[in-house]
Amino acid sequence: MAWILLVIAGLLEVVWASAMKESEGFARLWPSVVGVIVALLSFIVLALALADLPVETAYAVWVGIGAVGVTIAGIVYFGEAATPQRLLCIALVLAGVIGLRLIEG
Image 1 (cartoon, rainbow, N blue to C red):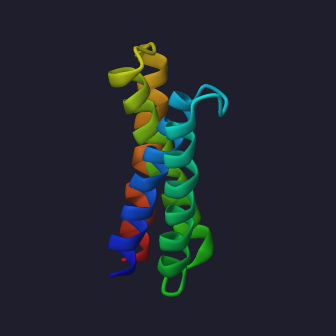
Image 2: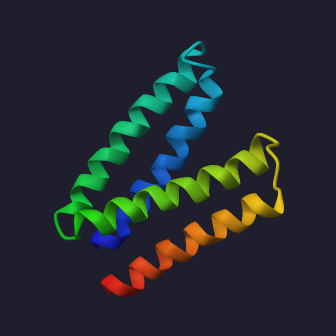
C-alpha cells in the first residue's frame, strides 16, 4: 500500500507543478489555487507513504516520478523541446526510480 501511496503522491506532484506553470507566477487565480491544494495533498500522501518506506528511497522515488512526469507534461502540453539529451536524462531518472523500487521490494 505504501508504494501505491508513493506513486499517487508523485503523480500529484506532476499536477501541482503543471498548475504552477499555468498560474504564470501566481498571476492566474485558479491554476494557483489548484497548484497549492494539490501540492498539499501530495505532501500528505507522501507523509503517509513514509510511515512504511525508508525516507531516502521514498523521497527519491517521489521526486523521480515528479521529474519524469513534469518533463512529459512539458513536452506534451507545453510544447517544450524533446531533445535526445533530455530524453536520455529522463530515462536515467526513470531507471533509478525503477531500480530503487526493485531494491526495496
